[in-house]
Length: 495
Ligand code: C2O
Ligand code: CU
Image (cartoon, rainbow, N blue to C red):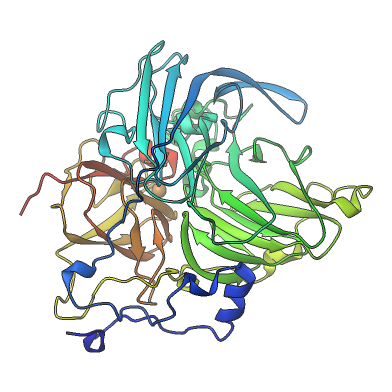
């Protein structure tokens, strides 16, 4: 059986300028196999399972202290919960195969856990309360230790209740043993929606959503999401933005991450085009775009060529809400110039928007769909619903924790097909695995979080059950997760 027998799939619509993109993105000539995807198909041995890097023997130790902390945005003192006294928490950076040992101290008045969002870690360190561990009690300590299993841009965050929305998150970067991209500088941008003043704490906001609060806010919030008073990049308000310094002629890598609780952002840099190189940390065939839409829990890595001196807005606009987060890109050559006003929206926001259909796995891996082994071993067809009347959210009519696990067996090829019966988009996130988006190209990107559009939006992905355990699968809207939109994918087996 060869790939020629494939009935469906195969990468279609290769772009004529692909080679230029590769050059722009700095991929070495040998870095990619330019065969059509699917030519490898033919047997079950070809399932694109995760190949784990060889251990380096290096151990990197970090300490995260989760505690109440004072935090200043635009001159106002706020109190919240954060890691090591800041929001975002400290950057964690390792190389693939390194062992990461993180001691988490809980100084909060509530139990907590830390989840390594996107990384296919061993199940026992996945940090999901009551699924993989008991919460670390106030005053307690827990050590997470694992070998970094895959390169990429990740987020660590609390997985208890609505703690994520208080600021308990930070960036985690796993670098390859040898970097294939060439660039001169790198910045991480973390996009956030920030509650303060009204409606108070995340628990207060949930009260409003449930309609127990006073006033009219609840109904509007239920229909459109929470209007946050602030949108931040790297913990900074638009009036006091983070400034990214570059020199003319440099190539800059941005790692864009959305750890926000409730907001999909549209990100666009003024004056520059982006070459998108990674989705959720995994390499894609590089593709150009003006605008990225980043759901909660998603990450994109992009390259910018700094060839347009000035001081430029890097804008992140909350979808369906008012306001804007921003950072500024400042050329050394333009040190004297003042930054654009906080609310100026770059015209690039109206430019070419990257869509999932543009994304292809850089290695053009694919499941051998349509060959002799014609399809997945197991398919879950799931509806997403909720938000009408009572504020509860469901996967296939069930509301976590009163929900049945979804059974899989080790080694299986599993397909998940979702249809969204609700009026909000849901960024669905699978723990412990990368999945391949079925985006019509035959070799979609490998991701761990993907938006299912509102109003009957459909999305499907495939994954190999190659990491035994009990794995959370949920909406990354913190309020949807908290009110039921979660399931456990369980390797317990089943029919
Ligand atoms: Cu980012 Cu279940 O988590
Ligand atoms: Cu949701």
